[in-house]
Image 1 (cartoon, rainbow, N blue to C red):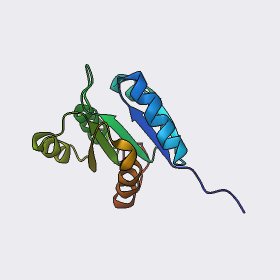
Image 2: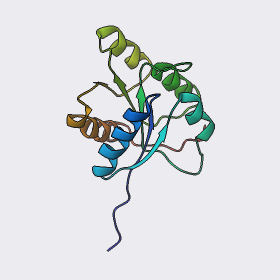
Image 3: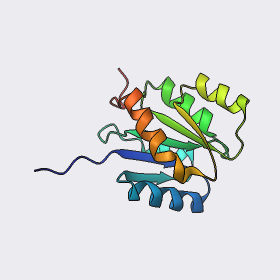
Image 4: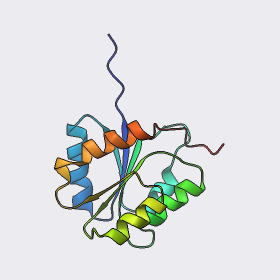
Length: 134
């Protein structure tokens, strides 16, 4: 019997310690994880041939924040689910995340309780589509 396919999650955060922690958490929960230290690095690396099942973006990052990164992906017709993590939760962030078509907003530092469930729910709501524009 073939093994079940691992879902691929791309994580973007400008804090290296957070990237290590999230990689460990998500790999422990069975995801294939690739990490990026900035939105620009993610945009440069987005492969058309390697599907991504879900993105996890930090909200507060230099140059390109998580909301702007989500907007850019949506402008490029990338409909893959996005989870936004933030140490600064408020209604304003939640409203802006909804406008950017982000499926879930989670507060740091207690992600271990809810991140995997949020990713799974986002993927159920919106299955991954090819990264290539229509």
